[in-house]
Amino acid sequence: MKNYISLQVPVEKDAFDRLPADFYQDEEKDTSAVGYWKAAWLRLKKNRIAMTALVIILLITLFAVVGPLLSPYTYDQQVHGDENLFPCAAHPFGTDRLGRDLMVRCMIGTRISLLVGVVSAFIVMVIGSIYGAISGLCGGKVDLVMMRVVDVIYSVPEILLIVVIKLVIDEPLSHVAALQKIGSGLIAIFIVYGCLYWVGMARIVRGQVMQLKEMEYVTAANALGAKRSELIREHLIPNCIGQLIATVMMQIPSAIFTEAFLSFLGMGVSAPMASLGSLTSDALSGLTVAPYRMIFPAVIISLIILSFNLFGDGLRDALDPKMKKS
Image (cartoon, rainbow, N blue to C red; front, side):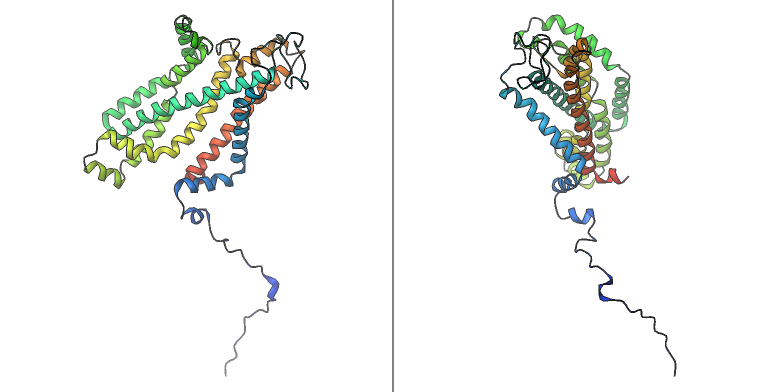
């Protein structure tokens, strides 16, 4: 009779913990049953850094949009006797050398910066997506020529072009009262963004379209006689929208920084209109005796640019999780 060796090891009942029911559910299984946008939102909500940046962006937007409506002062109101005041209860950010409340001027400056960022990013998105979609869909010699145009535009110094355009349009705009308050510098920024800054967006969209045009639904639409404009409008651009949004969010802080830099050099908004760059430029004259004039607009600029960059990174990872894994 054979003797068998038992390999059983006595184990106590409480030696192991029960796993939670969703332990083996990875990210793909969690979001497979929902739509693309809902899955992206679920991924974005898990990114604490991106959500914190989004909250900061919303608070800054409220500060810029709602704040001036609640302030007892206007951005150009000079309060005689309140010149060069340090932060106090009546003026939380202090006043400048003309007695103007710096808090409301920072609110208006933030509004101008956000407006420049959003409008410039929208211009870049429209021009870049159309140009890139046409180049990617046509291919061949058309794509070759259009991409060489992009290479040429990449070599143009944008800051120099902004200065030249500002000098050219200064005189014509001086006769238009509605545009004098905005200033020729901001209009020059919009023109240059429409002429130069869309090339990065165009390359991204071109790469996406060159992949999408090989898909079955695009081939089927082409076989049914769909025009190229219909393919771009109904099939290609809608399927690039996630990448477009992520790229636009990264373009906004770039435009805000460009506006702040030009306003710092005196080529931004026209006085008495304020922007964050012009406020920091004005603060240089009294930096040693009134550093608060520099601190507040500089902190706001830093928060805006940092928040948009962090939120843009999180949004990109949420809309395209494969990019994060790579």
